[in-house]
Amino acid sequence: VQTCALPISTVKDLIKLRKESKAKNPLLPAEGPRGAHKKEFHAVPESKNSKIAIKFPGSDRSIVLRSQQRIARYTDEKRQNQGLHNVIQFFMYATMTNSIFTKLKGAIFGFVLTFLTKWAFWRNQIIKYPKFYSLGAFSHEGPSLEQVENTKFHLDFYGKGVNGAMIKTRVSGPDPGYIGTAAMVSCAAATILEDEKMMPGEGGVMTTAFGFRDTKLYERLEKRGLVFETLN
Image (cartoon, rainbow, N blue to C red):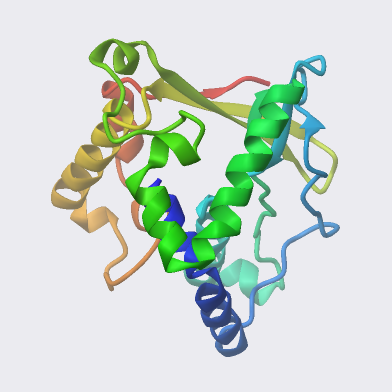
């Protein structure tokens, strides 16, 4: 909860920094018609209305968009000279069971994070008593070993090209909060050590997609139980 409460409380500062950054480095345009997030609580594709989705509140979308910009600027000068940037549009959602209870629970938790975190007193309360304010979703005790071992995750990606072609891919693996995260961090560290020559030569602060795009990170992750699939 702390990793959610603290960043959200400084979102105004982040918006200001991003505006300043865009003024200095205008974004390259994405190809195709401009898209937008779907309305909140829309039905998840292929779920037969059993699951609904809301806009994901994390920073993942921003990281993907910045990765796209960095890759387009520094890795394909020929396409840039032709006015083509190959920048995708990306929208991310969190899914939940389609029921009144989950909608209410999601709305309450959303209110707690986006409204109460504006004040230091409430931020401290949320961090101190996460189980109460998250309605049992988070706690200082953490999950049991059995829960960790039985937890899995998967992310589905639905893509549509400017020519109308469709693709669906999936990333899945073990518990993302403990086993999965440990695997990702350790594999990333090994990649920096062993594939340094495959990474951008200038170094510095960069997103993982830009930094690791030509390395063997995927192969290492697959050995640790993560699965990358093209479903159709």
